[in-house]
Length: 292
Image (tube, rainbow, N blue to C red; front, side, top):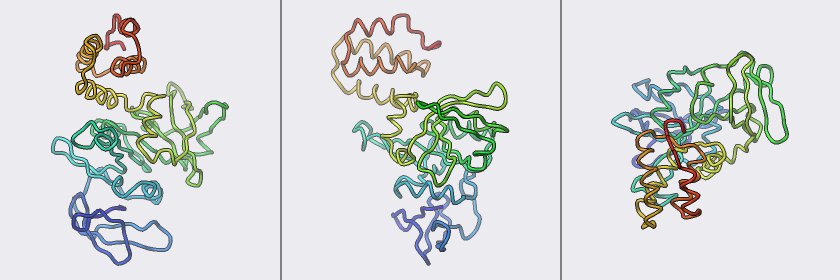
């Protein structure tokens, strides 16, 4: 791991140092050689986070892109705790809306992972994305094709479990490249598996604002953004007509937890006053979120 605790501080490894694991409170010592990224190791193998497996240099290289405060963050929900590889804080600091921070988690996955493990992590973190190391597949088994405005891929003998993920997928094909592949659609009906998406700068994945921009185009983190807008609407004195529509939409959303990207854009317009009420009514006429 890259981050340990010394007193109240989160620190990176330095030669000859000892510290404490932020999750299990066990003693850790620094490993600072000339080849690998400097990191911490447990003195004894105790009961640390069961989701964490031995880290590769690929993990550490990605984590080095993020600030100490964003790396290996312990997240607790309903009395259950896990260490997120990367957690980008949003909420009160970015938007001025929440009393406590919320997180957009990035899970870095190098080793094999089962569909059950993928589902478990997605349900726990909720607001998240995956970055998978596929350097062992590319270019022999996973081929990319440049279509000018987008890219397609074909994957022979794929890691089928990866494509069961419901959260955004990012593929890292080359550690030396400054680009990664953002998957927009997969096709798994027959082999070889395939899909399409866009190349993105790895640097662009280093802050939450970039994920918000991605979200606008491919519906990432839609649930969290909807909740943010509801929180904003409840704190503002909207005109009666607009508030009526917000209340109607919120009632459906609380029941079914779903809106299409189009309805999401209309909701933004309702709350922020960018359209007339006739337009809003037309977009939501006959709205049934169960088939949205």
